[in-house]
Image (tube, rainbow, N blue to C red; front, side):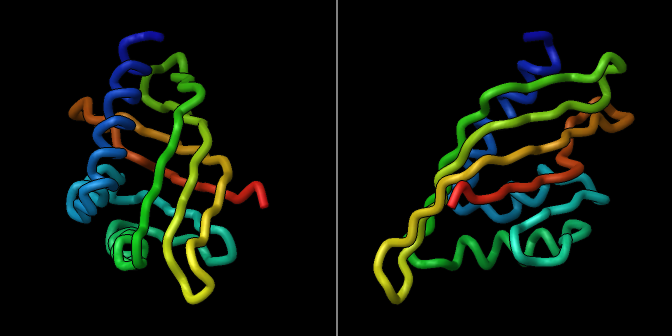
Length: 128
C-alpha cells in the first residue's frame, strides 16, 4: 500500500473505534462537509447535519454494533481520491430479537486542500 492507502487504513481503524464508543461527533467529523451517506431504502443523506441524524439513530438502536472489514483501498493517481471497499456486519435488538445484517460497503474519500482525508460518499448494502 502507498502512504495515502495506509492513512485511509488508519482512519478506518479510528472510525471503528469511534463506532464502538458511539462517538457521534467523531464519526460525523470524518465526513466531508459535502459528504453523502447512502443508506438502503432511503433517499441520499447530504451534508453533515443529515449524516449526524442518521448516525444518532443508529447509535440509539438497542445493542447496536457495527463491524467492518476493509478489503481494499485504491488511491487515484492524483492522490486526492480513494476508494475503500469491504464487508460489514451490523446488529441490533428489535422486537423479534437480535437482528443481524451482513453486506458490503464502498467509501469514497477525498483529500482536502489541507491534506486531510474526509468521507465524500459512504454507501452500503445487504447481502440478504
